[in-house]
Length: 360
Image 1 (cartoon, rainbow, N blue to C red):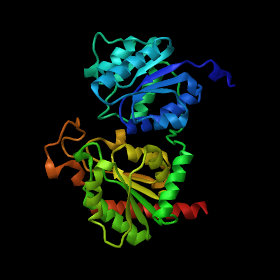
Image 2: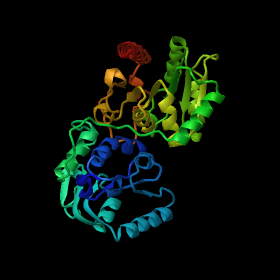
Image 3: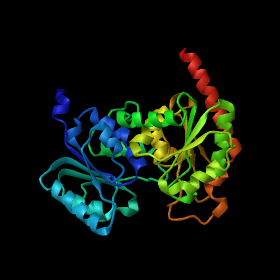
């Protein structure tokens, strides 16, 4: 075993947010794994966001997101699990009342937190507080997180950011069966995710439908729409804007299956959300639509040869606090015209052809 890894510190990390946040955290995890074994890391995350950790073999605890009783029971289970553990570093990347409570009960050589200056309290149980601006940066959120670890005294390499996540073999078999049943194997495949956590984080569904039509007419391809079971109406809205003969198929899969599907796709187009970052982690070309968050802070990791593009037409209130939107039909995502997205698609296709010819 590498001696550096054998003597590496044990690091606990608290990050209870969304799936996209955990996927964006993968480059930091990979740099930590350059100097430590997976068993020396431990993450506290939210239920439903565990996929990157499972694929990287990193131990974790996931909070139950059900009823209040189940949440309280989950908290007690975590405290019981941590009671007999010691961490050289405990890193709180969430900074909430619950994370403070957990931190007070953790045995650690050094407790570190990061967050807004306004969230820092005099009685916080941290040895080091690193102020970060998750709305404006400056710089990408991965750079902000790396800065936190370095300031805590945990050296990270300056190597390229690797956000790749291995594909689950069983999920890939399931996806291949789906594509075979739908007669989509071997066709240029566009995957569209028209959903988003808030209505104002969604590009209009009819424009996604027109995007699919462009793909069919210019690539003779097919489109798969990914969504949750509760988003049938959204799926139908996209389908209604597509020409009748163009193949558009809905897909309601698990997170591992979505990741496997993206690995089979030629292009992903979707809103600022977990699936967008999941597609990027699968190595897929990505076209992302941003409005209420800055793509320079929360966008997908850059790709070579123009494989990752984001469209962003900010309004005066962007980036916002995501507590609501009063702009209605004038909201930020509606500021991105269909014509611009089609022009970007054409450039991406041209760049991809040029890259293929160069590789040949």
